[in-house]
Image (cartoon, rainbow, N blue to C red; front, side, top):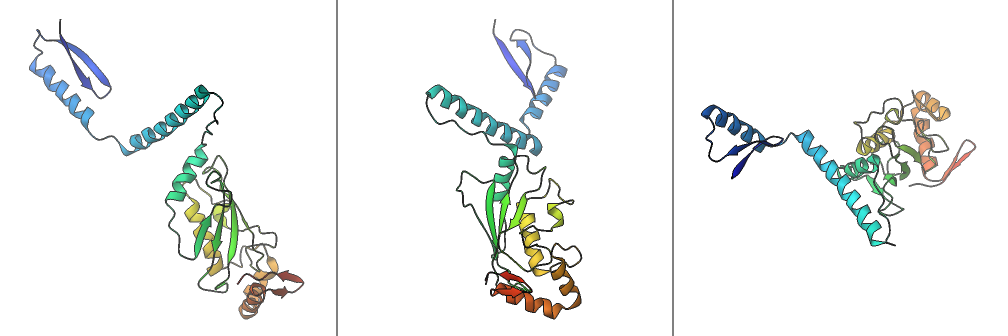
Length: 233
């Protein structure tokens, strides 16, 4: 005896005998369900499906590698790596900021950002930062340090950076693009109210012209007080 399948949003919803004619009321309800099933999916659902497809592909690659015997195992990406891939692909940086991956494409969790301010006290200087991104990113802020020794109220001589979004104001909705812009903002508008280098902050508050002189001396390679700064301009 032949049967036809009718489908709703979640698959087959009933079986109808060809010799039986369903009522008009039932057919109307079935047609409504079929229309619902054919509508576009919710964007959130599509995003989840996309994530599941990535995970499924990783699982299949791992299984194929193990069946092949002796082949290199496929490293499973963490949620942090997946999110970082998205952040990197969506970067929209000014020309004064560049990003590089010194360890190659297989290590995206550690990278460097170079900032060359085009205005302000630090005009034409070049400042390098290292980024280390945790596997639990974005639930934890990236760890950022300044490689360039710089005379700056918000960056100490060991390269630690005082930026609110890297500390108490970090939220998972923020991204790498936001952090880089925050670092750039430190050079265009250094903040004497939240310092790591207290001496530099005091000079900026009390004598901005002397602060400017100290910055230029440090950037061209020289001493500020008892501290030597390598050339970065």
